[in-house]
Image (cartoon, rainbow over all chains, first blue to last red; front, side):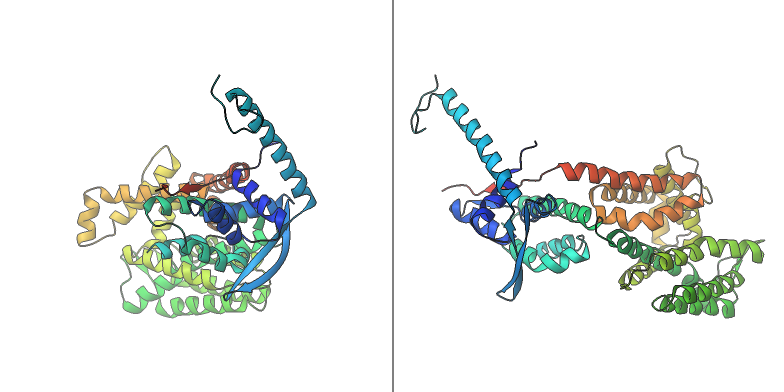
Length: 113
Length: 317
């Protein structure tokens, strides 16, 4: 199975908590990075389209905020399963990398061996 | 400038998508970082998003049909501007090129009937085609080039205006926008400003009349068009063309169009009617329909498998 792209993974992560929209995902990434990271608008909205066509997310509701209509999406059960698979794969990769670098169990210290 | 560019990119998304997301896209793009590199990254991401949404749109019931109708109306508008309406203008102004004769009464009748046929298209396909047939006959009576009698002129009008109108009638969706017709008329009028024999040039461009013998069809097409235009320019434009620059300008326009067809699905979809029409006209341009279909298949294969993940970090101070 092909790995999800980073943007798709971030979208699923945000939607796993609560329904949201493209602008919401962009704002969340900006917020958790302390304002230093910015996703390209097109890559977020394009990924929403792909995820919806793959059945990983679905339309939830529309809401008018500040005079602009926002289209909210929620994650589907298939989407949750897919995100869980991604997390498992990533965790395994992180663990392998930590072992290679000689990190301790908490991954806080370590010297290249 | 930047906002206008982003707005034009948003217009490349299919209409139903724009209806749902235009506001959100504009809001998010307002906050995009400034700078040339940011504009390039956002533009690439928007082109990809547009491709993905077109991919989905063309799978919806009526999506392909309404898009093809849009392109057919654009093409019909272009053909009208460089054909019947241009001839009407020439005959009324008394500026008919040497070797042609355009009786004003027939040219007026042809243009009026064509407009009536397009209006009738809203109500009934059959009625529109019947009025359109009248426009074709009047157009043939108005068209006298060299030794051409009624039958070849009729065939000519049927091949161009007749086929384009029939395509619009066949593809007409329940709710039709007439904006593409105006767009086609504008494009045709601009083309006509450059060369009064635009419809003749279109024939050379399509390969119906071959002016330059070139092995590669795209090169031949651009060379044909450039060669034809150069022969009909006057004043400073003619001097410009005589230095051979025009051929290169024309060539790069054709190449840009080909690249746009591959990278921006909207362009490829809108080109379907014109490509099929030109493809039917000559063995030289028989390449057009398969090329457009290959372009569509190409971006369906490629864009569908590509995830665009563009983000950037501000330098931490």
